[in-house]
Length: 228
Image (tube, rainbow, N blue to C red; front, side, top):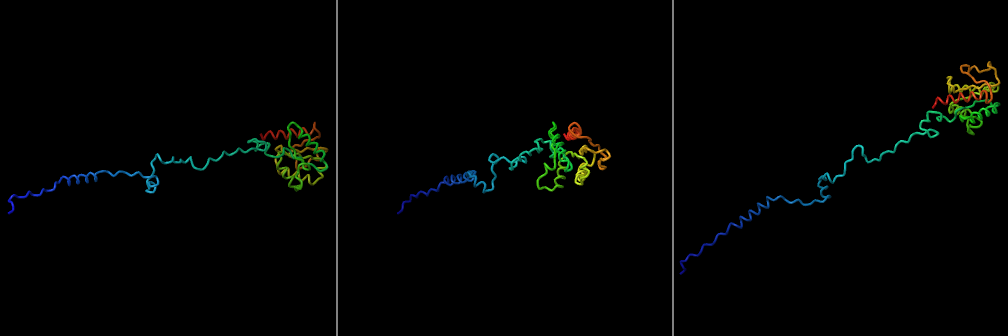
């Protein structure tokens, strides 16, 4: 017969372990997730922007990538002066001597005097300075345009030569006013023979270094001084 002694009732499981587990879950859920270090490649692929310390300095409007242009060189005249382009050196010659073919020796004498003077005037003498093979008319017109002053060597041969008349009219068309640029040098002629086209301007009468040559030189030098 079974003993009447009652068996001990089975113990109910303690609630402590369950309570601890619940506390652990709560703590785990309440913790903030630790950030995983991100490489620069991953950060750019995620669209995140680099910090201000990692960014290269921004280029302002005055620091463009294009190089700074070099300073513009100053324009130099024929003799290295920046202001000479509007003065004496703006033309190739100071004087263009117009003469007849029979007065070539007289024209050479005049040119030698002007070039050998202290002023060192630059003269154009057609038979000496024209380009070989150039057209006669073109060479003359270019010389007149490239000279500050024109000396018309007016002699009996000059009046007889139609080509000299053309030179005279061309010189007047380059400088139509009495500006001191066209200088008639008359020799061997009376005043009555002075060309009518030139009556509005004074002429130099005489020949040689002590006569008309000196006056021509002074007239050219005086005009060149107005260009400086």
